[in-house]
Image 1 (cartoon, one colour):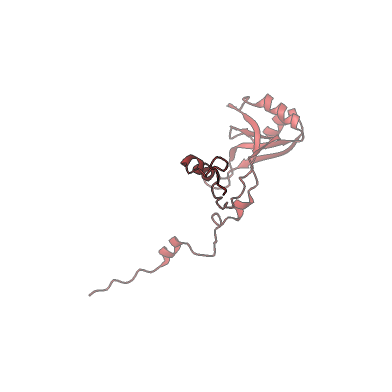
Image 2 (image 1 turned 90 degrees about the vertical axis):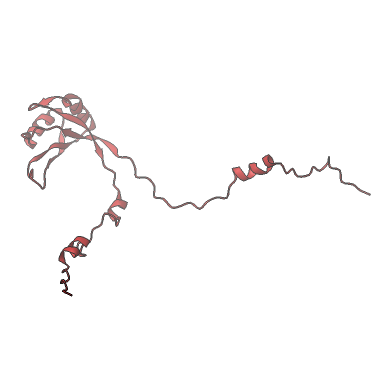
Length: 165
């Protein structure tokens, strides 16, 4: 007759600590939702400068005369108001691009906080905005001009004539 010894094959333990450990550490995997990757952070271009706090009388010629002393200027974006009461007037800032990164750095160091027509210039490296193609294709920002809006429908609907009962 053979007998099974409890010492040679231990019975499974029913204590809560031994049962809970595998269940807590290995839960059933939940399905992952497809999320778009986060947009890349804006990059800083070392050859493009932001020039701010410009006096309204400062024009493109003035900026070029000042900034060409520090290197070859490749491009100047001098911004104006497009609409509103200030239409046609300068916005008070500009973007300037040098052909060489070292020239941009020299101009930044030399001209930041320097007075120009009574105002201290703010010169920093320009941040390049990331290209976000998903935002352009989003329906949230898309407006369909062929469809009437709720407000225009409310304005154009005729009010029912009052009945005298």
